[in-house]
Image 1 (cartoon, helix red, strand yellow):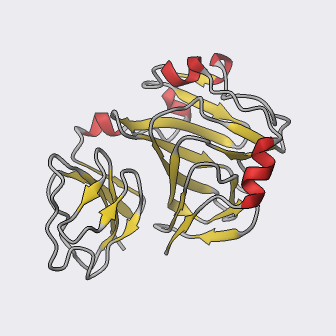
Image 2 (cartoon, helix red, strand yellow; image 1 turned 180 degrees about the horizontal axis):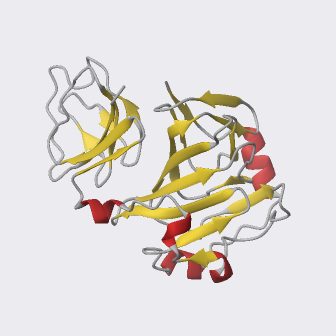
Length: 243
């Protein structure tokens, strides 16, 4: 299941009362080869190009990210392992492995690991703007603050599950019970292919169908049926179940 969420009046009303700044430091910092420690776990940059930044998140059991939003970027949250409750101002979404929520700009959201073993999440941000962050509520007192500073950065990778995609030669990566691969061809529809995400261009088809860059979508039997992709130079992440 993939849920797509658009901002509501509650989102816009709350956003209008909050201080909105985008950190130039966070937007321009090179996050490769570091892990960012969080009070709920940690995260690191898994892959980045001009269109998307893809982050790998580890949430420890029972812990939650702040209730926050991004005013300029779309966010796809994909559960790689475990179970997550993604809460917005208006709703709650229960996500298991290889389920996702696509959050359009300005949607306030938080993610809580509800499985006993915690959870691993892939966060795909479009465009790459780490400083685009507005925190409304936070269990750790970070409301109103920007992204973590360098005091929380680590390069001792022995303490983490650290598997940046660039170290996997950009082909494929197996993690737990799934495989993520990169293809520059139209993805093939197979029994084990669960979802796809375009990561360098919005996909336009001859029939006028569109898949936004960075948007996780379910790979079903009719998405490309009798379709022709007319976008030049595209690439997809393909998520397959190994169970």
